[in-house]
Length: 60
Image 1 (cartoon, one colour):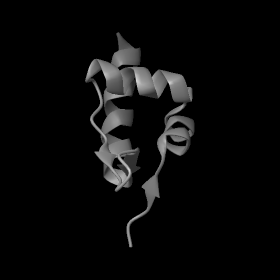
Image 2 (cartoon, helix red, strand yellow):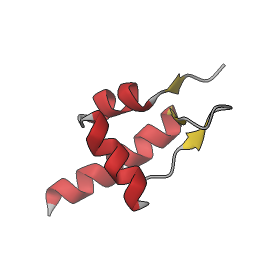
Image 3 (cartoon, helix red, strand yellow):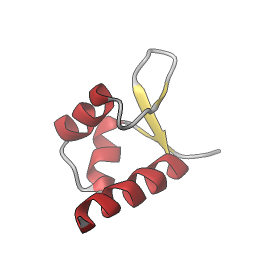
């Protein structure tokens, strides 16, 4: 079974605050999957993609 991360876990892995990641979701920069309650969830592949994007932003 694939590991799923909630907002707090994903933010910690990405080196962001929970609020920072939520802001990115609200802006439409990040689109998480949703669980049955409508809460955002992230898979390993999602986190890799976001991390790659975040690293490119930091290069500029």
